[in-house]
Length: 52
Image (cartoon, rainbow, N blue to C red; front, side, top):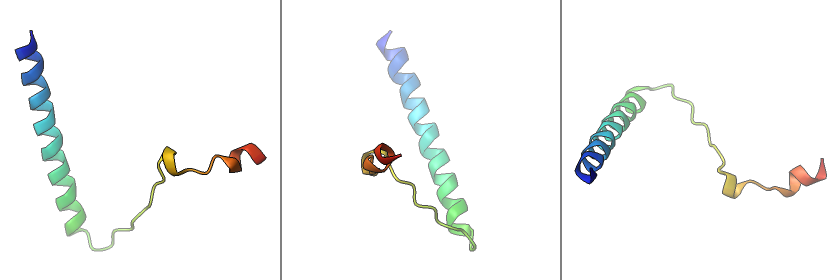
């Protein structure tokens, strides 16, 4: 049972890594890419929401 789970997780991790490589290559090849900075929930200032 655990070997099936381990093998499946390993396959999924390898697939995610391949997708990451592909998207990084797309980013490198794109000259007119616009960067967008996303804030994580940890860095959001929740005091702004309380004022509303």
